[in-house]
Amino acid sequence: MKRSAFLLGLLASFVWAQTLTQGERDYAMSQLHATRKMLLDAIAGLSPAQWKFKPATEAWSIGQYVEHVILAEDHVRQHVEALLKKPPASDRQSALDNDTLYSRAADPDQPPTITGPAVEPKGRYATAEQAAQAFRERRDRTIAYIASTSDPLRAHADGNGPDALDAYQWFIRLAGHTERCVARINRIKADRNFPSR
Image (cartoon, rainbow, N blue to C red; front, side):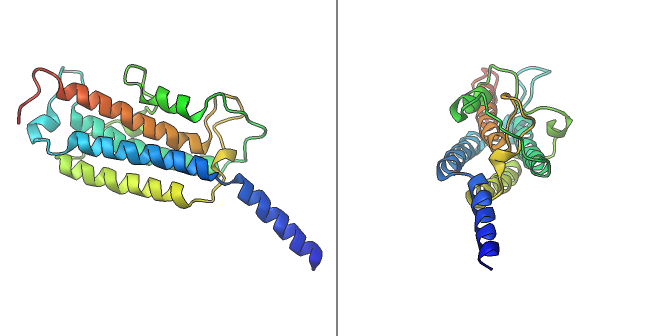
């Protein structure tokens, strides 16, 4: 009986050791909350003309950028779920600290970090209000997950190499990606042809 209690305690401590530290949890939630506010502030009160305005024929509109952010939120959650089903990455040391990863993802002049057909906008949201509601729902769900999860996010990664991201780091990239898109949105709003209403 004592031996089985000892083994259960050992297993519990191993599982607990794989969960996020409070510092990791706080960092991710801080970035996710901050970029949630950035995006919602950037699109508040936009008219339909402003929502659809493109500074150039091939450029994205604000509406397309916001839809892209919403799709990225879903994409990252699905990617993390897939990573958690794979075996843990062994003895992996990440080459990137959280601040560097976030900064790279947030830089509007660097190539995008979350791309592909799954995150291509298709015009799903006719108004800023509709998109804001969809974004709020998804981001709030992401924040609640980070706040409460005991999933071993640091133990599961895209690979064993130093450049592979673990499941936790994908949420840091997601927050940085949101800031990147807000910067692009603000550039559209600063365009001299941006509609006044």
